[in-house]
Amino acid sequence: MKIFYYDAETQNNFVGDKKIENIDKVIEDFFYLSDIDGSFFGLISENKQVIQFSWEKDDIWSVDIPLKSTFESDDIRTSLQKYANYDECINIIENTYYNRSINNLYKVLIMKETLEEVKSRTTNISKYKLNIEGIENIKEEIVYHGWERGLFLYWSYKNNLLVPEVEKQKLIELYLDELESPTHEIFSEVLKNSIGDKFDLQFYREESREFILDYIYFSTEEYDFYIDIEKLYPEINNTTEISETEKEYTQIMKIFDSRYEEYQKIRE
Image 1 (cartoon, one colour):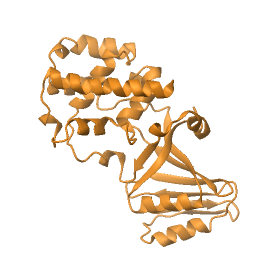
Image 2 (image 1 turned 60 degrees about the vertical axis):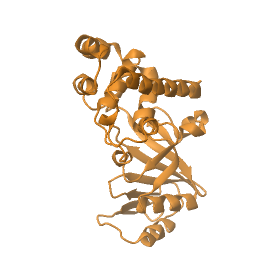
Image 3 (image 1 turned 120 degrees about the vertical axis):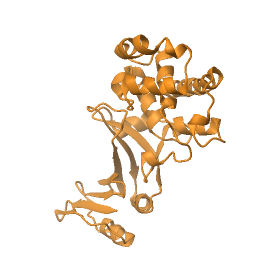
């Protein structure tokens, strides 16, 4: 783990270029940082995840974790954020050092909303946790092959969540006939040739974009695409073990239906 910080009182600006092996040194540097407006302290984890603490007011720091989402357009930046007191900040520092999760975070679309606005409309079920080892390493129990997300893309089309350009130019003309008798391979092809392997927000209607980001990319305790599949098929080690039948596809899409209904109720 590396650190960087700026002390607004002493105007000491530090950017560490060497890995810090002793967590006590990190905690000591944070402890001596001046508690005034403009001071901030940052961590860079082993997988280059940045966590920054900015002083807000007496014993309150804002925690900001910028994310590079594979499902976002370039003009939207997303962060996971929360407010934390000194002891909670120390806990986050320790969790980052030991590659543990950070809990009770809020997803904030930067330049579009503030943490306070998100908190005012967010229930406990839609708080997030971040695994410091990296988003890409969270789901290691099952090997995924892409057809599952191809199925989700097809479900999105069936529920009118995609923008008309994608429906007309990419899905309907090229794949609608084949999707009448789908297989894992066809769903993989739909994903690869329709939108590539990225669920960019530009492919989805405005009213459905937040759900797509929440369900496919971010992790909550009860609200996660991959966890749902693992719960549905607890005995498998590889998604190719799921039968290529209409029954199985329908069963998975019913879960998508229920999750989208839950999301809509939360937002009502």
